[in-house]
View (tube, helix red, strand yellow):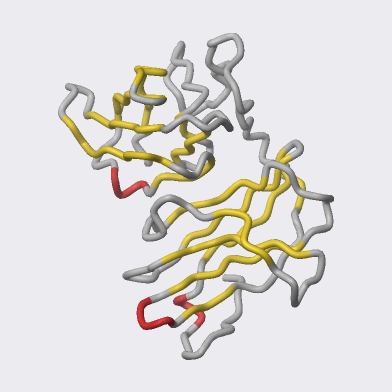
Length: 216
């Protein structure tokens, strides 16, 4: 676990965001984490040229209480910026991780482009997927077993509806503001296919499905 407490209350290290990573993926920097807090008011990612001061917020996930989450920095000034995660709790308490510089992502996980110009999903290269199944460009599972959402970087309003394989409603995300984030695995109850509908300004952008492997 990587992190340090800077706040007006004292917390044990087990409370800090776990698996805090800062990865350079193409031209972007992706900051992701896991936390154990039972209730969070806000989480934001902060960036600075300095490792200890002058930090400014660059983004926040739409639901701070998701245990596994992340924020993408699409236009970092350079590859040597420092990033940290700020967590605001109840009663004006807060904690922050230590600042970290990006590492180059060597996992081989392909991050889709911002806009699906040819309307074709990325090729199926993951061994955990069924033969012949090609993932969505917008909502997909990575080899580390996270469900990633990668929406176009535009001003449209996005809504996502998830359904079981038999098309029974699971849950819905309305007015999604963050364009790059991970979904907590606890939202999905079992392995197999999960149907979804992605809407942009109220119009269907994609109607497709996810595949969750048995060891999900």
